[in-house]
Length: 443
Length: 174
Image (cartoon, rainbow over all chains, first blue to last red; front, top):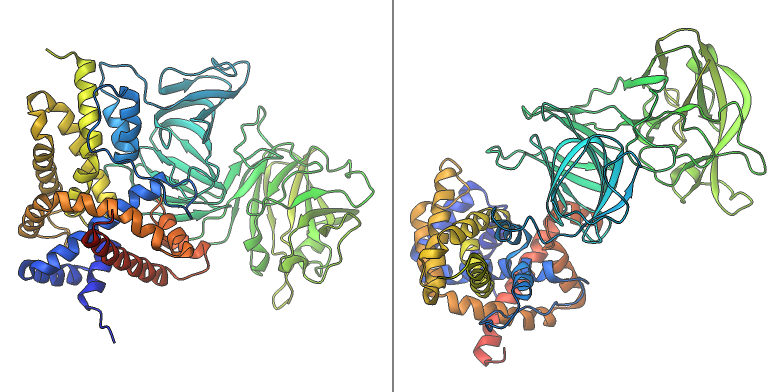
């Protein structure tokens, strides 16, 4: 039977960055006294470093990419080819550094193309930008880097492209759509470093450097800003999470975010909405879910929740969407709340309005709803849902999809102020039901 | 006298040829790949700034010397971090790493052969785990495993690869 050297696990912990201070001291002891162990240690780290290179070259992670063997390049090889090899061998960060001597071209080796823009922006569709620094004072512009990640800038915004996988947002609102091919995309601000883990997210940087980070799809990691001597991180954020990081490295949950009706991206309404803020009574410091504010967003096909990309508001089968609700401001809730029997949500209302609550029709009507609201007799649906617990036991509708039906309740609010809503479930109530939706129509 | 563009071309050519060796050298002296990337950025800047004074035939030895100083500077910044090797260990490893630079380069080429010998599932896991900025915790969640089980499997894979590269190099089949 083959016995493995127990010191091997110490090497494994070190290579993975998991070694404790005690592990390090033990390793030092072995490295000082045992030449064979030193050699083994070096070989493990060499393999570790080389694996990073292989992985960065791999298109399909099941295949081993051919490695560039740069033993000696002939003088006739074009500099760009050499530079391309350099990218593969040394990584994008070094590449960016090497090709950015100040006296040379501003070319950073990354193609920056305008793939969408509003008329009032200074950029035109299809324009290839020569400068890596992009600043807009009005309108909106969407940039694509190397036919990959896109950056959606809403004025005023100021962004510097470091390379195809790295940007610095100096100010303003930027939504980043990284897609599946650019995992590891980095957004720096003065307050935080955001590393994408395969997703779409938005970053908004205020004048003081305070940074709002909103995850629209997938997952990201929020770290200390580049150059910080602090080692703590803010951790991973999932779709439906939002966090504000101050330049002083203090973070807090961002409870309400302005969004657009049919897509999961940040919104910038021309007119302020009726609902100016949303908060709840969840005090867990690690809780980071946000409510989406969508002015004029209620319509067929509008997204219902911040955490679920599939569930959209629909009329009942064969019917028109209720006219009473059309064009109302919506508040996208999130599904975690559906199980909080003591939940309290506070809506900050700016003007007289009617508040609508779309309540899962399968649920017993909550006391607060029956007391403060009246039943409109209207119903809407969300869906189609995947076969998750919420729709367990439900029969597909005529189109084959699974839908949840909601009863619509309403309450007139005669003046600006705060409207309080309660939990979707009563204490002890069993069952897996949908979180309610919220819409607000100005009077 | 070479123009700026000619100097840049020459630098890129030399850096391309020696970058993996320099990176491997740095990686052997710092705890994580992220640390190695940070140090490498400083190394690249210093190499470029001082490139006018170097003998191009001695580029690798000079670059290793620069990298060694940058690692020691990085070590000084981490003086209070008990997760970093003491300076004498870094010096010890730097000596070995410099002496074994050619062997390490051969090992990296042998690695390509050995990666192909891994079962497809393990190969996919390791290349995925080593992707840019991939976090093992997130990866483990995405494949329905615990982070510790992924760490252990990655160590087993690296151990196999180290053994395999030794075998391949001994057989001279790179």
